[in-house]
Image (cartoon, rainbow, N blue to C red; front, top):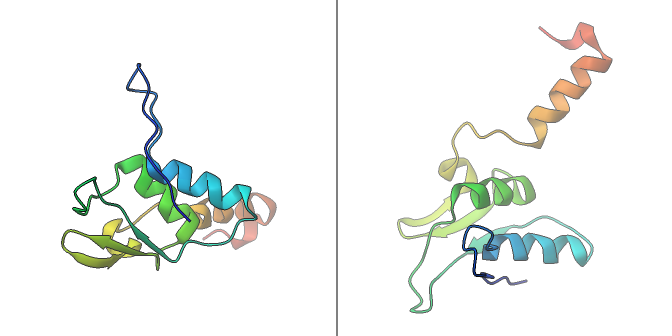
Length: 102
């Protein structure tokens, strides 16, 4: 699966490659990302922006492997103490089962 940056004249409304990657993943039936690498035109590794790191975390989880300029890291290492789907599920569960909340 792949993605590419989509730029436009307003710059701020451009789409990062990670957005295209996850959109493609969902459009073709879903699943989980297991590894991710991003590079520029010269083949140099790049780190995703904060929004894209969150998107990758939510669609790959804490064990997603990311190829970084400092070597392969898990998303757990890239985003320590990340907020994700499990946090939302916990709050939803506590709303329906108040006795499960500490």
